[in-house]
Amino acid sequence: MSFIRRAVTVLAAATAVTAGLALPALAHVTINPGTAEQGGFTKVAFRVPNERDDASTVKIEVSFPADHPLAFVSVKPVPGWSVKVTESKLPTPVKTEYGELTEAVSKVVWSGGAIRKGEFQEFEVSMGRLPEDVDRLVFPTKQTYSGGEVVDWSEAPKADGTEPEHPAPLLKLTPAVKEGAASPTSTAGAANRSSAAPAVVPVAAPSSADGTARLLGGAGLAVGVVGVVVAALALRRRSS
Image (tube, helix red, strand yellow):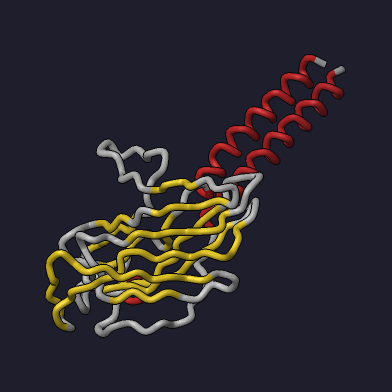
C-alpha cells in the first residue's frame, strides 16, 4: 500500500508541474504573430484570455506607441463587439512617403462583448508602416472585467530578460530581408510586407497552437507517469 501511495504522489506532482507549464502560455494578453519586419505592414491579433472564474472580460483598451506613430491602422470587425479608434494630434509632425503625418491612432477600444470563463478572443489589426530604427513596439493594454476589475498589461520587458508580472503585448521588429536574399524568415516576411498602404482583408484567426501544444504535452507526461505506475504494480504482483 505504501508503494501505491508513493506512486500516486509522484503522479500528482507530475500533473501539477505539467499544469504549471501549460497555464502561463494562456495567461497574458499577447500579440500574434509576435514578430514583423521593419519598414513593412503587418496584420496581427491581440489575443485576450479570460483569467477569472467569476467574471467575464467586457472591454479591451490597446494603446499605440506615440513615439513611433503608425500612419495606417485598420481593424477587423469582431462579431458581438463594438470598436472605437481614437486618433490624436502628434506633438511633432512626422514625414512619410505618403505625406506629412500630423495625427495617428493612439488607442483602440473593443467593448460590448464578453469573454467568459475558459475562453479567449482575438482582435485583429492591420498596421504600418512599421519603424525601421527600433527593434520592438510595445502596446500597453487594459483588460476590464464585468465585476469592475481592470488589469493593466503595461510593464515593459525587464533588463535581465525575465518577464514582469503584467507584461505589455510586445511586437518584435526584425530587419527587412533584401529582395532576392534567402532567409529562413523570408516567407513570413513576405506575408507581412507590402509596398503600398494596406486594405482591410479578412484573414483567418491566428492559431492557438502554442497553448494547445503545452496542454497536449502535459497530458502526454501524465499518461506516461500512469504507465510507469501500472507497470510497477504488475511487476510487484508477479514477484509476490
